[in-house]
Length: 371
Length: 86
Image 1 (cartoon, chains in turn red, blue):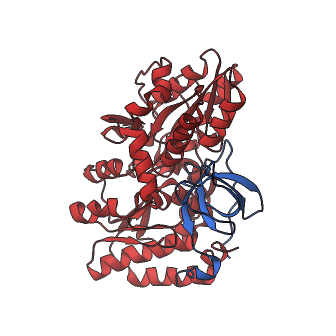
Image 2 (tube, rainbow over the protein chains, first blue to last red):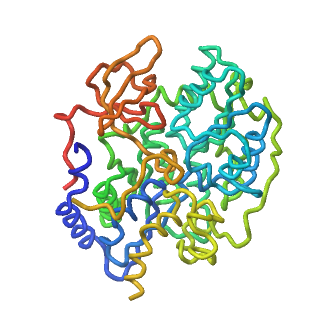
């Protein structure tokens, strides 16, 4: 399969692993963060971590949009779903994220009309098919997904579909990275940068990482060889004494991003002054809301939502996992009280969440380490 | 080939296209320029309606990268593609 087979070639993988081994300095510990949940998933799924020397550590960043949604937002979504006449639509993983009083899946079982969709366009189609109902789309995701929501809102406006609205929980990638870099308890040597977010924003917005914090970042694709290649490129920068933004995923990511996507986002969204991230707290200018021009399609204005801030469960250490301070298995409830079937924290919900990825795949590697 | 440790389902309650930052390569089959949509085929041959505003113009046979029903990037033609890293 084009773009797949050649990026999963085992011989090339071994060659890259050999190059990585030749680039690391014995006695030095390297700690790299993969920002994107998709990378976390690929690393565990394909055992990329098994090919790395023991002194190269990968820590998992906040790049899973489901993992960063705070409980209060889930409660708001459930409240909207229970509104009379509402069909509430969302992506699959949001269904299982625990709020303070259950998940959307449980609200669905309790009678709310909640439907899983694959795209905002699907939600709009449901609105067209149900003109006597109000259809709300729970929009989550980084800049990869936000243009899709923006284009759907423009389409709703152009087609005069009035029974469609959006509960906007889109987030932006740069502010949480800056917050992480400001965190005193996190020492990182470099970043594997997000791939598909960068098709939209480009690689340029990450220039502050080498410029302000002196860390290399390599934007990477999602196949196992992409990730190994990116790690090789970071190590080569460190070995050469360079520190810059590099683009391993040039076959898809233009350095300047997709201008049309940026323009449509600028038209439809505006930055919230603050947005709460689970485990990371409030981060300035890190969330999007609908602009005044699209305020009539904002579900939070069309309906009343509780908007109550809910503290994360005390036992849950998702925040420290999201910051890469602890490994998933170091959380007190990992694999015992918190499992993919009954998650306490969001990192255990999505298969791209660090805890679920580790629970599903990585624990085998850890068992080998223990032995 | 580096093998999967386990199969991973497509988008359902256990996997989210958004969280995975998924991008699915597809081929344009038919274009509806008036509506800004295209009928596209994924690598398994399944058909999808895709928003094409971010990559227009597209013509049948073009390869695009699709996320959440929207084409977010044009892909190079097969014979122009670069090879895997070595």
